[in-house]
Length: 335
Image (cartoon, rainbow, N blue to C red; front, top):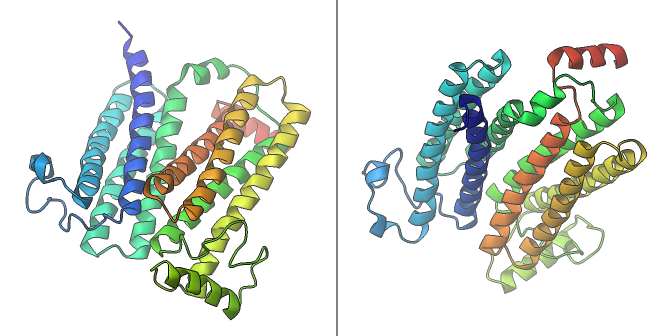
């Protein structure tokens, strides 16, 4: 039988997987435009959500209601994780992270309900998405703090140098901002504001003028889509530009790794997975545009974005010293 600590460690990893599944379902709700398929909250058509009949889960209701059910389960699991951490002999910072995760998931649930109550305003919907990604990072950090890898590294000063760490911090920040931009793009209906690739509005370099907007709207009219504004075009292009910057930063990190960290397995292994995931994410982004936002393709693009964030954050966790004392010493020495 696994020990109490081993059970907590396994539970934290399982919880990461459940959280990623919830992100997938949340993306699916938006991809299918099912956000108001259930118009009341916290009830579902006047019923307690877990008592809603399965045979009535049709159309958009099955996506939105399933998302609510899993979100409620994740909230309960977060409470279990928080209580489990505080009743264990774990470090205080892990216990505080558990509490922060519980507060975040409660706030996330309230934001989700408010988006329904106020008919999906852009700013509320965006906050709901940002909190989801933040919660995922908190859960990941808890799982890493409980991992055997973390315990093994605790006693060794195997951290990377400041140039590498700063580069990874910048990468994580860029990915986080990119997810916010993607969120903004989705909730302002800007996903096909530039419907062509590799051209943008008919040219390789966007002209950002009325002619470009006319070409885009002519295509949208021919495909029975509403016209878009230059603001929507700009939001879409910002997202593409963000993807380019992330790709260039990742190339720089690969260059640094080749020079300094070929004999550091944790860094190289994580970086390889990150490289593969970023390439997959770029292919999914291109396919999302060319397929005219096909539902599964679009949902996978959003979910893979969360995986890119998770791997970037894992690369950071594997690059810095595990103990706060060692981290402070490194900052003091090199700062």
